[in-house]
Amino acid sequence: MSNIFQKIWAIGVYIFLYLPLVVLILFSFNISKFAVSWKGFTWKWYEKLLSNTGLIDAAINTLVIAFLSATAAVILGTLTALCLQQYRFRGKQVVKSLLFVVMIAPDIVLAISFVVLFIFLGISQGFIALLIAHITFCFPFVAVTVLSRLDGFNKYILDAANDLGASSWQTFRYVVFPMIKPAVFAGWLLSFTLSMDDVIISSFVTGPGYEVLPLKVFSMVKLGVSPEVNALSAIMVVVTIVIVFTAQLLLKEKR
Image (tube, rainbow, N blue to C red):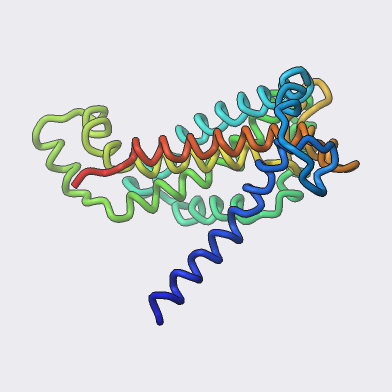
C-alpha cells in the first residue's frame, strides 16, 4: 500500500508541475484564436510567429542577454567561490552574507537600486544597463552553487598537485575544474533561466530601444493570451528541455 501511495503521489506531483505546459503546447496548435476550447489542428500560429519581427527581435535580444550574463556570472561566481574557499581574509563572512542578501532581496528593491546607481554613474537605459543588472543578480547564485560543491573538496589534493610540480593553472585545469564542473554548468543554466525569466528588474533598466521577450509578452497578454505567444512559449519549452537533457548528458559522472 505504501508503494502504491508513493506512485500516486509522484504522478500527482508531475501532473501538477507539467500539465500547464502540456496545455500550453497543445493550444499552440489550436485553430481557434481564443484558447478556450479546441477547434482543430493548425500550424498557422507558428507561421505567423515567424513573420512577427517584434517577437523574434525580442526573443533574440533575450537570448543574447541571457547568454552573456550567464557566462559572465559563471566566471565571476566561480572566482568568488574559489577565493572564499581557498583564502583567508578579513571580512570573509561579510562577503558570504552579502551574496545571500542579493539572492533574497526583493526584485523591486534591486530594480530601484540599479536605477539609482545607473543614474549616478551616467549609464543610460538599454543593453549595457540590462547586462550589468543581470550579471549582478545572477552571479551570487553561481557563487553559492560552486561554493557548496567546494565544501566537500579535499584540500590535500591541491597540496599533492603542488608537490608533483603542477602550476596554479594546471592545478585548476586538471584537478579543481573537473570536480566543480557540474556545479559550474548548473550555475550557468540557473543564471540563463533567471535572466530569461526576469521581468521586474528588466522593466526598470532597459529602454525602448532594446526590448526583451518577457516584457514584450507581458505587454501582449494584458489583453488576452495570443496564439502566437502560445507558439513562442511552446518553442521555448522545447528548447529548455533540450538544453536540460544535453546538460545532463554532459554532466553525467562516471564511477
